[in-house]
Figure 1 (cartoon, rainbow, N blue to C red):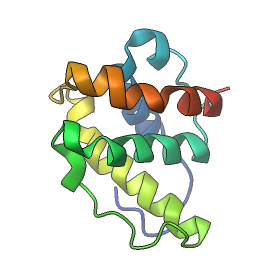
Figure 2 (figure 1 turned 90 degrees about the vertical axis):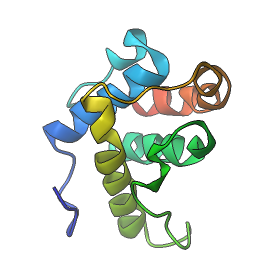
Figure 3 (figure 1 turned 180 degrees about the horizontal axis):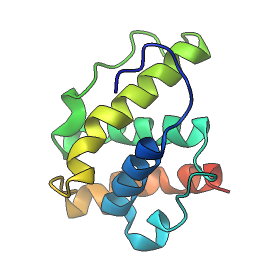
Figure 4 (figure 1 turned 45 degrees about the vertical axis):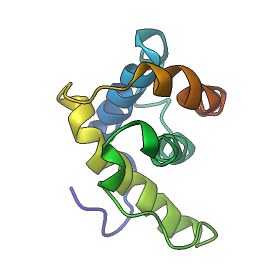
Length: 119
């Protein structure tokens, strides 16, 4: 599904976020993901997690980074949702693996911020 106009977070997006968080943090974190707990900020934080863990895995080329992170919020949200959707496909199919080092060091930095968005 292409994000030409931002129309909100779909149930498929929620499933993708859940799969990504399960791969990085396990079931205790992914259980917190529901259709009512995932917000625009959750999508943004998961996109940042994926973008910032480029050196850990291969999903980094799924969507180019925005040229300017100070762009209007709507454009940034579209980028974040596009990244989560495209990079999240291997996580949904359980084909993506997150290395131990990536999970325990780099991804650990983002866990508190992502948890905060799910409350």
